[in-house]
Image 1 (spheres, rainbow, N blue to C red):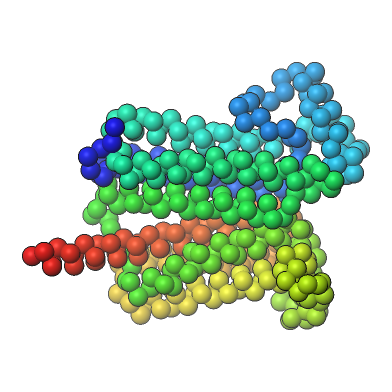
Image 2: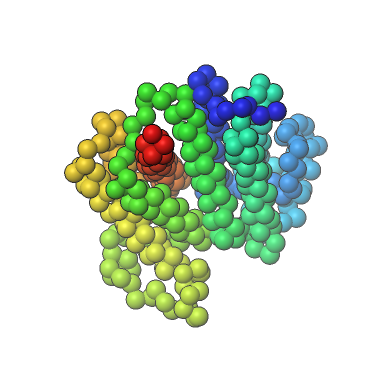
Length: 361
């Protein structure tokens, strides 16, 4: 069933391309998810039918979907003015979001089975691929768990579940990139250009810290906390606003207080930009391959661009286009950090292998 050795050559190249395509689809999926949230389309489909692919096909089916929607809080408390045509506008975006998720499943699963039948997959990569597929399936379940929270009592999804859903998507995206990069390196060893181990802790911290910033951004989005305090760098007329800890117990402010949550996101984002630029300056003092240096240049430039997008989104009170651009920028920053981390991990692996060979000799 399994290949006798890890993939290399054309087999590794084909699997790397496959995973890069899947990662790109997850990238688009996150953008679609942001669009459904910003347009308040996410609660338009009130049932989870993971095996259903077709939308309503006639007037009777559309009427049934709209009637189902009318039973829930979003229609009753917010959108009672809607006619069927208005409902269709929000329905289509959520339908596309769910359909795209299923498409990712097919694009992942079918080539995976084919690669296994061709005996291109060794045991280690087999379980990596199974883990990625399971994580993707769990992400779909988590998405419905998030939507379900908005179908009870009040027409807003839980910001905790929203944060978990977004964080899982980023982790899935990052892991797909990581495995794909490893396969690409196996297929094209001549293009390996690593990073010095002295940068290892810096790059790892950037990648993991980026996930923390993304999570804090999900809290801001889930509570619509970005639609208040729309000034920068001052917040409510102060550099450090006085209302940060008005709720009790004190730790609830980090989870529920709109002012504190937005302030935390500002501070965390600024800290991430500073960390990235400190790493970039440190890298300038080291001997690094030209292609690798370009990746670090791109990470530093994208960090500034992402911060700028965040400030513009805040000042303009979260318009959809700018908000989506800001979310997309977060994915790009994270992807660049994953690439840099992978280069260090590969360098350390090669160094360890060299030491082992030397000792054997």
